[in-house]
Length: 433
Picture 1: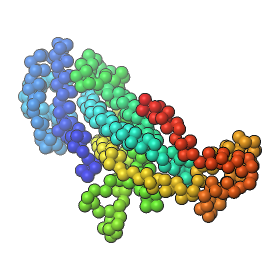
Picture 2: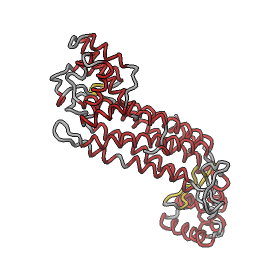
Picture 3: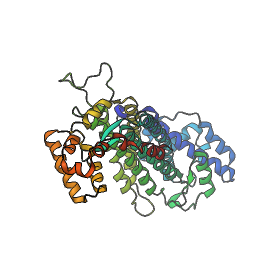
Picture 4: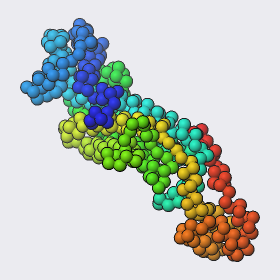
């Protein structure tokens, strides 16, 4: 996580000051719940709330931790400095450090998920707009990087929209799964704290009580969360790679917007490079590299260890901050992307008529020619197009076997471009409703 690829709305979630504020809210709500149950005096719970407007001194907490070697104890000591040691007597009663740490982490991940969901919505809006704009803009579809059959630019955008829409559903599910809290005490048995305290704290923080914790919230939840972020990152790379291919000089069917004053190369003034989508390809790798450590965190010793802790201090901010930046960058790329319909047609016609080979094949079989012979007839003409750039239709019109089977009028009919776009509306209805 470096400032170059970070947005303040997401980095704020991971600032130490934010973390300590959440810790404070967990402790304060727990005291409130215990006072409601008559476990601690009401005046002690009220005293904790005196610190609700306090800006906790991060440097002071670090100073205390340098002595205690324990972050939660350092925070509690600093809290007592604000509200008084007598008033703080019942703070953290019956709780263990993981109650604070794990519940806080899930609050942070839930808040991060809310931002990411909005980011996905922004990208979906950009993809839908461009899909509708270019619904009938014909371009050649490619398989293995080779010309296949005609499609439309709108279908390309619609395909990416559908993929991102699936990702939104996954992210909503991941948010639901991570939105749990635990205030269950040492080894999770509630021996020293009433389960109703957990219920109250979770309600105040917008979480659900973890059905069964040990001394930590189960890490399969976190593995699922980071796995979804990894899938979204892969979808970002998928879209970015398509744009990068489209911007190649010999293709140039689409390109990133090139702003006034922008420079493409320190050496070659003519260059317009797909730098944003190349960058997104790299950022996707950074997000995905957090997935395996999150999965390895699932396995812990007995009721707890802290092998997961150091990992999550890194991957929590890194994955969410990077993905937040990447989603916003991609939405901007799609929104401003340049599209070149004339180049699309020029590319399709580099091997004139060749993309209609399957139509001719099918027409011959419909006319009574065996599939094997039909394929051989079409292929021998198609190969001449590859080798000599001769017009495919003209070759067929001069092929006596094809003319005998189909007639010239039927051959001409196989080159109607609208044949390939007749179901675009049906696909759009499936994608956009």
